[in-house]
Image (tube, rainbow, N blue to C red; front, side, top):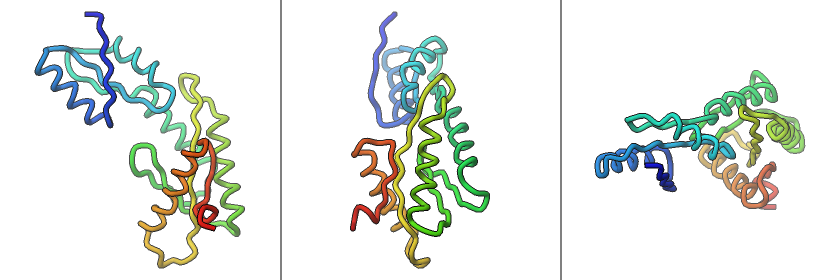
Length: 171
């Protein structure tokens, strides 16, 4: 009693399985915590206080942050722009602009709005954005996503909290 064990696992599904296995093998109660960004320590403290007899998966602040994040998206982009959520924290946007610079400016305005916003719990969140241009309507969606992902990974590996264009990487 009073002992806390921390395990780094790939995602909450793996963590829930590990917690159940721990319960079956040792009889120990386990709390599984997931969170976005800096809320992890606060989520850990909250989950230990809320731990029950079963295996619990708590998404403290994470889900609420996503709601606020979605509201920022709605406030930045137009009604006709297409927004898709795929994966846990990944979004895809398809929107028309008159020039590549205009597209970058729109995405940077959104990035700044997120960085300046105080999320629940007093947390600050930043976003890294990878973008690519659709120059040919026949370009497969998978190829567009791959290009945007390459730009995103570049943004993440070069300081985060920035907008990077695939086209700028290959020029």
